[in-house]
Image (cartoon, rainbow, N blue to C red; front, side, top):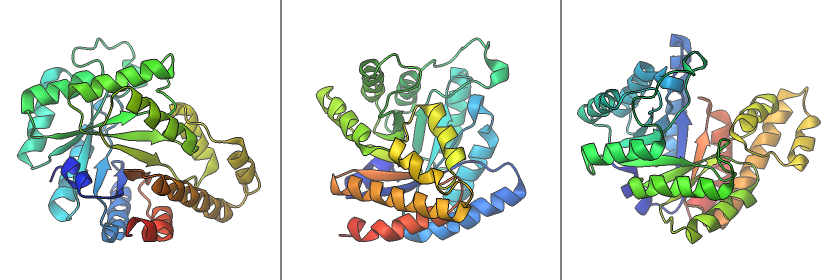
Length: 291
């Protein structure tokens, strides 16, 4: 089923992101996580795609397994920067053959050893969206990324909004934001989108801070601001992983409650292939979702 159709019927969408595991042990861990999260009845789950297509086969394997062995609606991430258009069309045709209808269209990053690669395919995500639409019409539901604090490579927020609008005009159905930790950036972003005439559903990307050093590194790479007052709270528990996790769940719960109370269309949890934090946050907010 197409995710956009499910979003039309859902007050607050809940969804989860996974990444392809590298070992058999990690694969078993992932599917234990999926088994634990499936009873939450998420609107969809998604599977990431490594830089330069480095997890191409692993992504396909996990997407196919979720599609065939669970009742979950699954979306495959697809990056275009290191693929020719022919390679992209082959990947999409294969997904169509196995019954996948949902794609997250991304530009992606080149691996470090391919920085000088000549780009022969789509250079930006809007080109990938357009290629999918031109080649497969309305078969795929297409999601794209958006950035409440702008993409790290954008010179300013205005340019970033224009880039986002190009993806929407190319045929994107909905968007998932990069992680953010201060809701004011998300609300300001929604206001800018409305003024720019962008009216597709925008789902908030949520990253619970269960390991401060790890998540702050992620945040730095994608240009997401962790407010100083939150940083100070985590500094108290730098040597206490369990207390740190409890604090991260508490802060993410407060963030999600505020978003739901302000009519967010959906919450997309970056799970890091673990279930415990997401399960606890869901337990804290489910009364708001189920109203």
